[in-house]
Image (cartoon, rainbow over all chains, first blue to last red; front, side, top):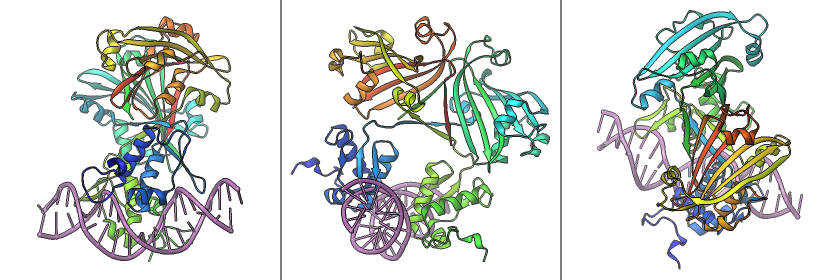
Length: 241
Length: 241
DNA sequence: TAGTGGTCTAGACCACACG
DNA sequence: GTGTGGTCTAGACCACTAT
């Protein structure tokens, strides 16, 4: 009997769901199970691997979540014909991002103003006409160099206490996470030409390409805040998968 | 005893790990368990909820993966003080992306050439001096409008059969997934100024901000391909979490 | 050393979807 | 109808780590 029939080369006694995952991965990579193929059922595999069905189940469930398999009741499990590529990005607080690079973090509040929400914002956040919003502009720096320009709007209907908060020392992002944790978020990434505002803050030329993130946040179905983050020249968002 | 001690309001008999997740979420949102707090152990919660420990375990494991909890053996489970924000983006094939919008997909091969790998590419892919690479330039269109410009390099040492493949009809991406499935990938997103090449292909002005993705792919520790994708004006990558 | 999470098992029942 | 995955359970042992 070939030695690689059984995963778990380490001599440990029990088969782990990790072993099963690795072995299934291997069989897919080596085309033993090709794209679109039907994979044996959990019971068969459990017997093959010499483990409980629950173990196989967990392995296949995770591989499904990772985009390698497709499962349907009664129909069985198939190798995804077109593997679902997905990347996961962590969205840290700027402070954490900067200190993690080993740079000194500095925060500055550039302006703060309570104004009637402009039309596009009312539309975006679902505010009624005449609603007031807090508008903040901030700069986050790394080792003294501009790193990220933050242009934020806060819905004062939903978060009236924001009007009296002091954003001179603590950035609005950090204030918000302690005020409204675990919210629902929509985030977009795009390339934008630097406006005069942004260019001035980041020390670049107007019109220069700027990596930009826009984030809208809800809490219990109420819009809380909308922010546009403009990153300094050369910024990249990177991940592996 | 308060009615909300027990989740599962629907009158169903068994407690699902989903019920447990929802209830834990609720308690965190309502600050019953605040940031940094120690959460009861699995055994206690299982008794509370009237379910097996495995059920609580799955709920908490998934919440941990979602970034809401932090777990350590012996130390127990805590509510993350700074919730780990993470976004997941699906990286579909261009064809799928375009047809999903309801637009007609069109692919065109602009140029193809076998050349010695330039220094930056040798560096990036870990190729030896003098290594040859296949250089492809392609355009993907939606309803006849340029959508994505693809500038790709393929390592011919690792994939010699690419040299004789016909990329006139099938894009290199699609060819590659069938030739080398399930590889290891590093991907970056950035904002770049359109080069003359890119601008001409996409029908925009040189220097215009262009949302750009760079992807390098390995298979069994060998570099396979490196690609730079430039998106048309107005492109956004969006997700919710 | 002891407590907590991590995992495996064997068995059971259910829900969905294909024929 | 019937087969496949989806989930729950009760019990067990293990592995890490704080004390």
